[in-house]
Length: 520
Image 1 (cartoon, rainbow, N blue to C red):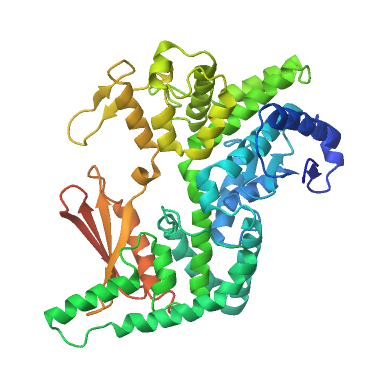
Image 2 (cartoon, rainbow, N blue to C red):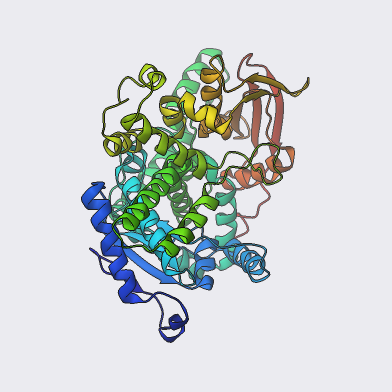
């Protein structure tokens, strides 16, 4: 839908008669939501494209990591088969919606949803997530909403051309290796924003020429004698040319791996771009879902207040909403960690309360906005300028800590668990810091970087993993991933696990290439 229209996907018009919604009711609902979200809340969104899809189509979107126009890969078919089996047997429900960060913003609605649920989903996705995508600084820095669909179309066509020219097996081996390193294929600090598709295609030839020149420079730096003075100079030059240390492993391989063919480098680049596209979503799960949940909750309540939503529909909405924001206690069998919907929505509602009805405690903790009477302005500022970790550090209040009965536990892996802080005056700061750290992506993902290449010897690629809190990499995962890395590099790779506090080497791993890529 562009600028307010609704598109129904597929041709099963007759089958929709069994549902309690139709095209006209969806359009009226969209317009009513738009009046509230844009007119009263003053949200700022991309134009919307709303598509209604079947459960099978939703499963298809699921399997391709939620992206339309995704290239083909065997793992997507595997995920589809697994999810379809679970769904058909009633062991798993599907999401009511999937939304794509693009301009226009694409929201997929399930055909099986009731009219009430379609209303909830439109408010949640087409306005809540849409506003967050357009305004949060991480999405603005790292994603190209205007060009992502064109880029995915380019990527899909490029992978298909590679399969036709080099064979499906050859392409899948490169994709397998790239997917294994996907979490190490992002830049965590902003760089120059990529241009659009036209500029992207224009730069491909220049990039290939630059890569060829770079390889020549790289391998010319191999020292011809073993003098110590000569070696120090050569190491400095080598690190400068290689740009080491480098945290983005896929980027380094794409630019510097000596044996990859040009099309294989382009495949790495595609996977790296997709990994980078999803990185802001990993950093803003609580805020993004909290924003969308806040918008749908406030919107449907306004629809009810205006007499546009009946009591029966309101009860259905509240039932679904309550399930979404349910936070089981730590000793509940359903507990699976902190529910980002519950925490995000709880914080948004708490900020609204602090803006409108602050207590003395709120005024002491939040002097900048307590009692300012502008909850939506305060929320929009938070949505735009923070990520989960910093948002929790800034906005989680003692009142919400008490309400959710949060507490902090220390697990040193040696002694029994120790409760470090609870929801009282002495524990607020500790609990807030511990929870914020829990949602810091940098704390959850391993800190790995490429530190050197042994150009004097066997061209071994050397990496380091900085170990915090004595948490080493999982033994069962590291060898398969290192073999993929060695295949892409073309020579042996080694990984040292280094204590972040003492710099002591805790563990070392090595792997050599299997020859899988060389055989293609």
